[in-house]
Length: 73
Picture: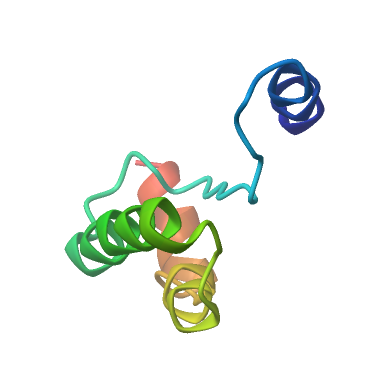
């Protein structure tokens, strides 16, 4: 998927600044959602992924055991 987006962007005026992939997207994580919206604003303003937001969105969302339990319900 990322390679497809990178290839698409090469043929446009856009710039690919990075990707954010989280497999837990179906679970409600408000702190993550607000950080993603703020990161999106910063990307539009500066064209860069800021490290402080990458730390937030890259952090563990829930302990692995809890995630497995939720998926198996």
